[in-house]
Length: 282
Length: 305
Image (cartoon, rainbow over all chains, first blue to last red; front, top):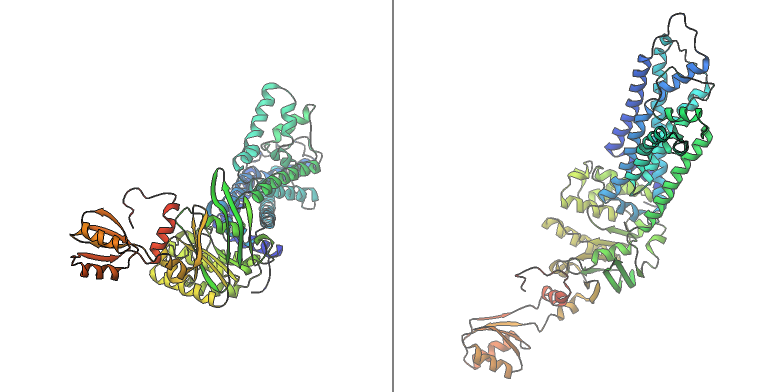
């Protein structure tokens, strides 16, 4: 019963909180099932190679494999966003936040610990889901003219990027205390609006703005980094915008720039959230 | 020891706590009494920094709550029974709070046993009754074995057995030299538990004294007399030094004279009495008298003493 308030203790506390709620277990289970299920579905529905056709290049084959494994991210990000929202609204809505801040009166350590625990756990769960998807979809691919190369580091890097994106999206939503609806709009609605604007106005700016949105920047994280002109698999949401972008004279982020942009969103959301949390009466 | 100096909290244009100063001393139970809406809960939230004071300050053991190295081990607080995530079990709730301060599992089991929650500890809090929620809140407050205990309406929702348990627990903890600060809007409960009482009305301290003193404030309250000879007896009582009001025929409210004196006067003057009853003299009346003008929301209609 000895001991004082410490950041390590607050981290442990947040970990106990996260794993002791059913909603957490359900959301993580759904993320894994969605990723694996969609991956298998797409792998099975790829067109059979036309007889006598020339085999696709190594990079195109690998890229297709990555697309198959990461297609579920489009849906998993929604679940991650919902969980991110639940993690924070669950505390405020039930009054738990008062117990939390009575135990950690400086507040900021609790907020940072919550973000770390949630981010790391989501990353690990998403990575497990993506790796399982890559592994179980691999045996289905040779029949479609794709020979997965397990030794290709760029494949695993894309999967790590995908897991990072799922975790960061949840964090953006989680951190925007009070602005959850706005944050969901930013992640889910604005990209669509910009895509429509870009079609209607034929101007460059909607695509340029869209490139910096969390969802589009995130898409760059789980792209296979190789010489790929086309993929054999159907394109994922957001890819259309970046394909259009690369064709026109517009901004295209590379994966490191995209990571920085995404981290920028997370930091901005967390700083605003932290200022509000520190100021407000609980 | 809790010390408030000029503590003020405004929500917009509404002043919930209006420049109050008080000291809560160790080794005794201090009651914090006032009608609903008087600012008791706000004051308690200000003490542990959940609300930010508009002006003034409050310290616990000489420091601001947020500056304490181990807040839970110095101050245990029950703010309301609902400061718990309903989807989590009681045990996990306590384990999560304990983890912040490196408090061991053994202590979690101890407070669960102490508050009689063993049978429901692994159940989710959403299904708890008000009384069980209250016990869980008290368990959380006791986790760090704190030297200061702040309990906001601790007996709210408890069964009679639970009420006695809280009373004995707080008296026992005060006996160990701890600072116990508990709020209630029920005077009778306070009278049986507290050594010292701070009365709050509309955000202001209107009395801050030992229980005996607060009780003494109630002496000299009215005696109710019913007699068919009211007119004549009123004159007699006035002549004897009493202050008499005559609210209805055959009925007198007398202050300044005790019931035995009034009885003797009646016998001497051969006045027939139908009723002779002291009104008040209890802590309840002292409280009502003190807060009468300070109640923010009067009950519409028949609120009589």
